[in-house]
Image 1 (cartoon, rainbow, N blue to C red):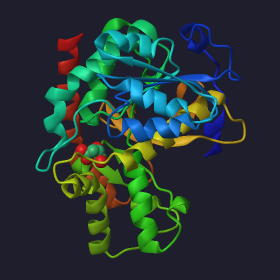
Image 2 (image 1 turned 45 degrees about the vertical axis):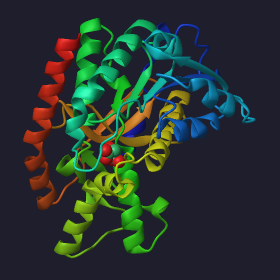
Image 3 (image 1 turned 60 degrees about the horizontal axis):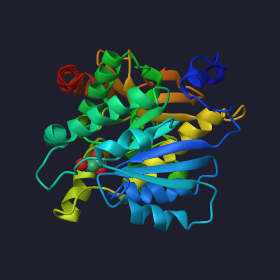
Length: 342
Ligand code: LMR
């Protein structure tokens, strides 16, 4: 598997990141939607990363208080804040990484797909701003429905001539985090020591944890395995129900998104000894779905290599076949919306 760790040539990264002085330089990370339920804990975690020199926070309003608060934390990152439509480009200007938790959360009874109409405009604004002021940035979208939002953004960036499939990510890390936690509980081991790929998308049965590849080995009965898969697929809904109208996962999502951004940063910094592998929903040719989450090796320009489909047992192969039509429909919808918004 370590054939995957070979170096690739550095192509357009510096060209895009004007003023970037190489890997020793601190990074600018922008958070769009920084005042919301995910945004605030996410910025708290980001403020602690020593590789970030500028933490740029953006939201519709009320950024001054969050920025003042964060700025008192004795870590190197300088915090700057911007608001509204007019502030978006300033917030993202020359960013190395943009993380986007902006958008409305689900209420009980809603599916993630029901958020397309309200959240597509956020994605569209970010895509236009990224094309204009940080075309070389790594873009990490948390905004739901991820399965549709990422194709929307890709289509807009393509129309603008700034699309680099290696730099656009739908964050699915929480599906991996949850899988590790639930399996850790069952096996009675430290959940941090559990590892498995979670592939597909980020809703319902498009979330496919590949239990057959779990380390340490997970051997449940058929019924136990089905129940575990179902819990992982419905974990977001579990939180939405428990919050009872007050939104969806914020703390675990912030944790997961931070973990993902930390890996993007490690990729940018280019560790020789460590192979940085994360699952994310990206432009893909590993299945018939044009966007698909698999394990990726991250490097200085985002995706260095897509590891592709893991080994799967027959049930997992069947579950993959079952999810594809649904996922492809979401992607087609995203591409159509993206074309309309370009
Ligand atoms: C999650 O998985 O918790 C998020 O996608 C939020 C949601 O609506 O479930």
